[in-house]
Image (cartoon, rainbow, N blue to C red; front, side):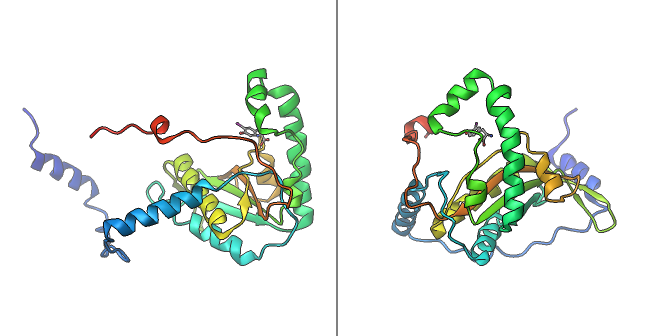
Length: 241
Ligand code: IYR
């Protein structure tokens, strides 16, 4: 005998009947825009994002803390698994801490680049001109370290599991990068490997894992970027209409 739709729904309802009902509010801030306006906004946003480049060459000029706060607040608008918001940003401007991060990073990266990386990986990276020397970690006025929380911790030490942590934190990182670009600064997605040392160095909890290091600042006047092209739409999308 097959279960009816009503039975299935009743079965699911029974499993959640001990919980308070979810609280919903009307969708705020939304208004439909005329199609021409949407097209113009989409084109302008694409044109702006297409101008984003990752550079390793940062100027030392200071950047106000408020701008970093705004980028982090924008990142914090990301959707996340069960709304766990499993991202934590540590924004470092203190020169001594940046120097410690750089020294520890270069120690690991030296081993990675010279002995841990298989030849194929070294060859794939060669066009990007990266190596174990990470001057951006001390040149940039801010070094933002993004941590992912596998589980949240209550004030009483209770654990709350987070879901889709990698996806959620990845989306937040994307929004952070877009926010930095939109305000007129540059950032670099840097992945020290391994990066366990960042938790100890920055005194973060056992529930957190560093996933990305994002120096933020102005590009140096002589900043360069690798000569790259992005895949065209036809290569990255398939439409079935
Ligand atoms: N983690 C190293 C190596 C590196 C790896 C990839 I894949 C890149 O696209 C760039 C760098 C580093 O950050 O230098």
